[in-house]
Image 1 (spheres, rainbow, N blue to C red):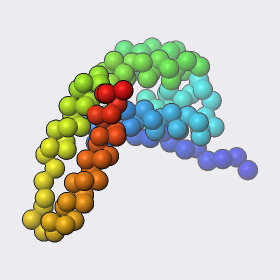
Image 2: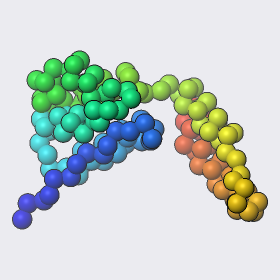
Image 3: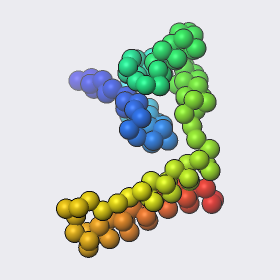
Length: 134
């Protein structure tokens, strides 16, 4: 039996762009979809109502022949990088401000808050600030 089609991960401003790229690369490893169709499949998953207008931008700025070529994914990712990829300094600052704004909810015990704050700080340092320093 053939395998079922697995849709590409959705693009959303609710997750970091770098995370979406990692998910797309993982999807490329798992999908049975021909290379010449992958960029089209990804572009068609972009929400028409996304505030960034990414679907319209992709289909306006990248020729259909480019999207349906074997290098379509490479071209699509390069285009997306120009729009959404952050430099290391911006990414490190964003990580820091997110950590700094983390506050205890009124119904959260202080002990639980302390544990979460510590875990979050370790994760953020590993995910963001460490990238900037290396």
